[in-house]
Image (cartoon, rainbow, N blue to C red; front, side, top):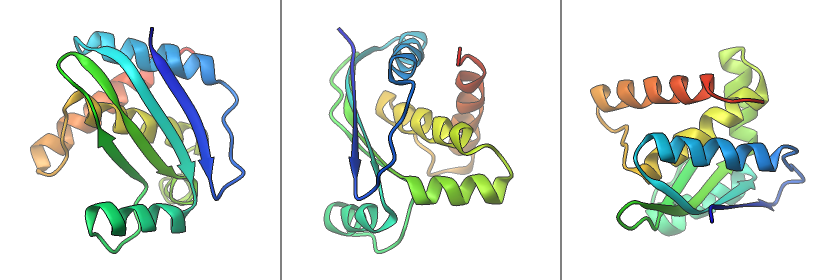
Amino acid sequence: MPSVSFHSEQTDFSITNESRIVDWLTNVCRQEGKNLDEISLIFCSDDYLLLVNQKHLKHDYYTDVITFDYSEGLEVSGDIFISIERVAENAQELNVNMIDELHRIIVHGTLHLIGYTDKEASAKQQMTAKEDFYLSLRAF
């Protein structure tokens, strides 16, 4: 049974359509030939995610998302930490709806758990195309 849990750290942000996000991410995994096992979405402050970045990745900069991949075989599992402050700033800079940008970051993190990377230009282009495709499939 797919499991997506929702948490908040140092932010009062909460999401209202949890069951639809679970269905959506289950579909994303299925279309990629994988099974959604267990994903934790942790919505947090910039400062909280900076500490995660410093402690676990030895990076000293702000970011919008960090994923920790626990996937095995076809089972997608991991933690996706998302800075709500970064998402709001990204949305403003890109002139898009904040919830749409949040969904992009959620699917971006999920695609990392599935095995996609974005370090090289061609890989980043492929990942952005996948994000756009899966955002178009949202039923909410």
